[in-house]
Length: 219
Image (cartoon, rainbow, N blue to C red; front, side):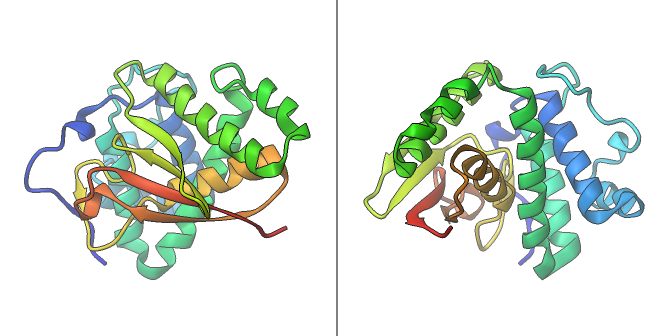
């Protein structure tokens, strides 16, 4: 697999990214690849300007970080580490989610999600996925195209505004960072592990990215 930039411009890549989201991804990447590996990752991602200059830990969009920058980091990781990159991306997603859970209680209505633990597990999961969509819609402030669908055996989390693959093309789905984010969010909410698979990706020409969350509990 080799991830490249699309020949045509992608308007999603120009969307502004929340400063803290990029910072959390960089800190997670630093933990996964090690501080000694970060210069090579940033150089390979075309993000040399961020070396020693991470965006602030603020839920703001003042650093001119874009969805395209986030996609560059993801592509750089997967291109640099090849087959092992997927597991590294999943771990980055989980670590990033831990930062987000600590910092975004009000934005994502985490108090209500915590209170939902009395509900059946799958009802909790659906409520959590919908809360994520609502939270992104509030914080990005530039439009958010997303929804949750019940597909029988799975719950599908769908968005046309994906920062993992904005402006990129590949021969297979590449948004594994968000698979990790969903895994960690569901684990925090329910204490359960659910299988998650990306079944559609804008990088391979789909109109939207789709992650399907299995309704079968693993533990």
